[in-house]
Image 1 (tube, rainbow, N blue to C red):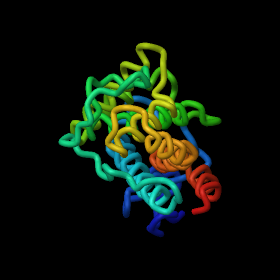
Image 2 (image 1 turned 30 degrees about the vertical axis):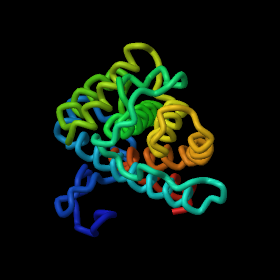
Image 3 (image 1 turned 180 degrees about the vertical axis):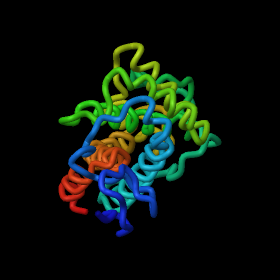
Image 4 (image 1 turned 45 degrees about the vertical axis):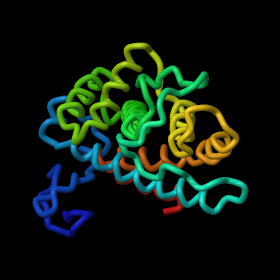
Length: 234
């Protein structure tokens, strides 16, 4: 048999290509659940972090392009996430799961990452055959925490753990509220914040799709990857 990614000749039943390292899709391992021990050997943490980062960056470009081309909507003020950009405390509309004392670039991006992590976990557990089991979620979060590439990821994972402990979710409203305030550099609800929020809401469907796509890639589910790509028009 040959690797579907690079064409290298691989042994029948092999789980990974010796040429490029890609997971191989075979009848014996297709969509096979990955347990906590396999997480360590499959380098799944770094792969998932990379996929979610890529999905988020691509989506943010989509958001910026969408707001620039919209009549009646001002361009985004803060177009990059920077801890140095701090707009202070949010007003009365602060989302329940926004756990930070102040809204700066790190807190804004961490909120989006936290939303992605929860989306990826829900998708991985709820797939038909389940990429992972519910009891493996704790190990996955621990591995991601140990592999966190920067402070923002650490903040995001802390946010996820806290939301799970409270039995709540970092929902769409939380992400929309935080981003619209940060993008427009406003800690109170203004007309421009409302307009940007209205643009972000439908675009979250794309971020969810990109997040699901990256998660499917990490777990070697080529059939679901193809299905999501078709849905997203890729």
